[in-house]
Image (cartoon, rainbow, N blue to C red; front, side, top):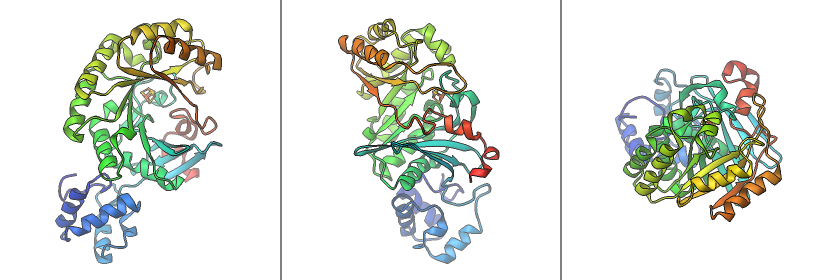
Length: 364
Ligand code: SF4
């Protein structure tokens, strides 16, 4: 937001909030107070920031930017789904009446927030509930940061990690995603290494991401997780239709360029679909594909969704796949399934409850 321009305050840094306060005819320290209340105290509205003069708050409330219910830019919780293991999925409402998912995943000394970068997604991956509904729009910075604050508030714990693995393709919303990362690090005190950006791949964007991260964040220390899901182009296109425009060789070449620019290794995500891509020959082909690549493979057992007939892989298939990669010196881990009973697969809760507020009114 430029100085004096209307727009949500969440997502702005201390200096920008100082400038905003001054542009409103207030001393700069009011901006620092706002910063403290937005990020440390989790204020949901300016009315709640009682440290500010009430006359100023009333004046601001009477001059809200069009379409904004409040200056701050927090979402409204529509629904909460809590699994036995504590995994908590929230359905949040945006100011313009859309709904998005965010998930808090507790584990021992961690709280990971899985955030969405878009409402819906245009990538149409066949195994994904979000991809079934197409894209509605990309999220703004405040709508991404709000997800982390919402999980913090609901779970009453400070998030230790943030993963951009929720709804949407982050590389189609690079600008807002990098600004949100900057806010999480500078204003919420997270380390870049606690953040993971997951992508299914958008042509030419990985080198751009590396350059922009260096320019905007000063360094690129977050984890880049690239969703492969198949060891060859044919099978990958079957699972990820948009992959036809991005051959596997070109994707891996862009990954190498990303590693060269940032000095960081790449994680490869691989969803195991029972009988589809979880066979020993697939593991052997994946090991050949990644030979000599500075990488790490995360295996994830598929969460079934109603719209597709894919099956969850058997524990033996998951274990066999892992062992083949290990035997071929590929760094690999198996991600534990969390919150299976909390509509855990990406986009499931939103689809079950309806993608717009019209379908969610009874939940509010
Ligand atoms: S898996 Fe990710 S990129 Fe693919 S459709 Fe779902 S949200 Fe989009």
